[in-house]
Image (cartoon, helix red, strand yellow):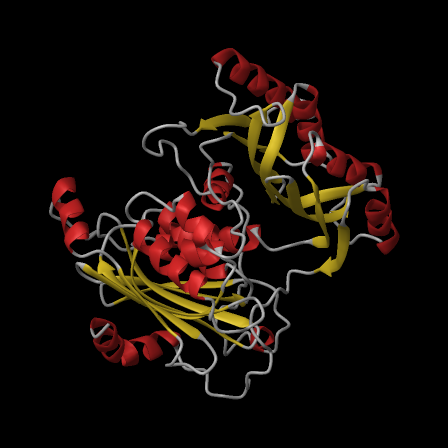
Length: 475
């Protein structure tokens, strides 16, 4: 018989009072570990708090090499082992202060412009700005789609201030921020917003086959008051891709166990390994795959999207292989009871991990901000017979920066001459070809000894939980 779990109803005002009495305490420790900075968080527990914490670190492009998480009950405790992209500890005082403030404020209304201005480095735009209108676009992917969309926006006088586009399993999802003309402010009028939406629908539906579905969703953040519709861009991309069902044909490695799949540990298995089993009243989810930046964010984001609560977790990397283990239940307190439920979660986790996996050759652009810039860049890519698999562009005042991953029109590797032609033809002040980027992105060194005993990451977690809890309580 299926187990039914009941949870007490908690008044939102009481929950808010608990947060005000016990705000998050964040300690940034550079002394305990010779190689990493430890970010220790001690806070009243709340649904979604883990993703909020990980999101702050991911937005700063920090590398999380290990994480220990415990949130069983009314208290949340976590320790993140982090470095910068070069593997160095965090020593910049403004960065440390920003992390402390951002983690605390993530529970009370978001990161303010004042906090960002005090940080002595550039933070990439990750949220819908109150100064722009955000359009969310999903549909069937095809070569040249982003180019066609950016061209029509330029033609109708819309200036793209930022854009992020992902493609996965023949689906495309984009979040594009617009101004009504160069420095013209947000698109406010309902007639004008409808006009832009109609043009976007025409482009997205232009080459669809009979029976294909597409949708254009307009998301607008009000310029005054509370952050209505305030959303994190990469969270939205995960949600949009999930809504499009890109996970349906996502299969991990048939041979999960690291002991059986020796290719994984030798760095040759490119597939994602996900196992789910019952464990002491929880569903235990184990993930093993190639390590890469923002892996923890993507997996936690998928669990949150599917309404799971992470009670305990530990994550780390051994060489180029990442290991994560989560002890979860549904938000209503139930565990995964059927194989169908477990299979759906496996597919969704594999999809969330593989969406961001970079395919193709990468080139970066840094130039003066101008009307129609995204249209110009994507047109040159299309004219050279290439297809964009992932793109990200943002503007900071008079400067625009972007990164683009391209393949040939069939999704295969690009010839170096084609990428060189794109770099040569772009009429911008600075463009750099980074080269071929495979799915084997790693944020950790491959020099870790591979012949050590393969201990369960869960057993390691339980053995250290008591010591962890004591150390965090002493902050």
